[in-house]
Amino acid sequence: MSRLLYSVALQIYGLLIHLVALWNPKAKQWINGRKHIFERITNAFQGNTLPVAWFHAASLGEFEQARPVIEQFRKEFPDYKILLTFFSPSGYEVRKNYPGADYIFYMPLDTTSHARTFIKLVQPAIVFFAKYEFWYHYLNELKRANIPVISFSAIFRKEQVFFKSYGGFFRSILRNFEHIFVQNQMSAALLQSISIQQTSVAGDTRFDRVQTIASQKKDLPLIASFKQDKKLVVIGSSWPQDMHVLLPFLNSFIQPLKVIIAPHEIHEAEIVRLQEQIRKKSVRFSQAQKDDIASSDVLIIDNIGMLSSLYQYGEFAYIGGAFGKGLHNILEAATFGMPIFFGPHYHRFQEAVDLIASGGAVSVNNSEEFGKHFTNLYEHEEERLQKAEVSRQYVASRTGATQKIMAYTHQLLSGKSA
Image (cartoon, rainbow, N blue to C red; front, side, top):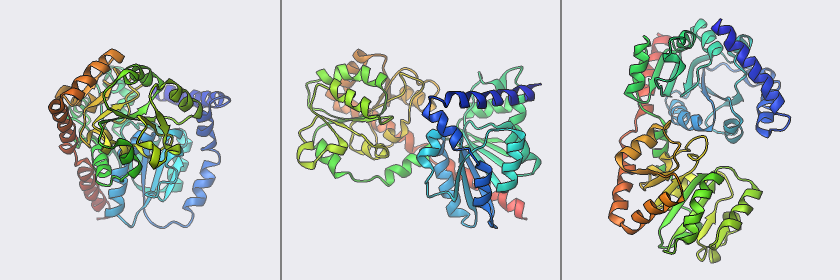
């Protein structure tokens, strides 16, 4: 019965996506990206004789967790072709030209026929699912075909359906994994409590990714000209809800301060509205010139892809999303060492909980709270530096998940070939 309900729910989901696509651009991308999907996969894999490693990520965030494993796999197993799939347009549309994969597609909706057709065409030798990907039909068909599937950077909480009395069907999904690499000991204990033994604690591969980003940071002379010798706060992945909290304080702050705002989504109307709300001299990155950028107080980033390199110039970071559905990536800022601010909806993000507990981050509920905490750190340099070092060490001490996953992969593939 649970399997039937699962399948019906997915069919309803597909129908709703088609309905929503009439007015929603992302839903339309979800549908268009899957048109003639099997024909395109057939053409792409025609003539391939090399083994295939399939990596699946739901969206962009999960891709960032998958990326260090993909790139290390490429180095250690150069004879494999790499297939990367996404469920969401926000991942596929941004990374559809990612050079680290040989094939990039949307994942067809999880049905028995789709899973069987997909696996028959791709014939993966090994499969990696990032974080929260638990698709019943795909995992069931892979298990039947004796194709090992590794889950990594997974995290579990006791309120999830796997650990409920009525969660038997969903527990059966987890048993289809060859191994589950979890982020923390609590997740491992929860899995063991439901007799899922094929698990170990590796950590979160995002720590490896952000460490690589920091080591490969790009110098940005225009940003250096903007910053000069003043303190700088980088507002990363901001939403209008975040700016509603930040702008009253930033507009009234009279001490020397440079501000970079990198919106999560780039929409012309919203950028124009944002500039109208800023009471200090502001400039858009696309319109900035080296000669006049130094005289501006606020720089608005109106492109995608710069944010991870911007943090190196900051003394403070505010990360958006936690006044809405969820906090965005704080690790890219933490690896460069700085106090980090964000809104109140952060509890689902382990790194945010950890950094608050250790003193490297501050959650704020309103403009007054942000102003109070920010001003204190601005005026007390020693305290700011202490929080900055906490953030830096938090990332540095948690790298290495990718190496653990690859060590297991070597054992697994050598056993298959023996």
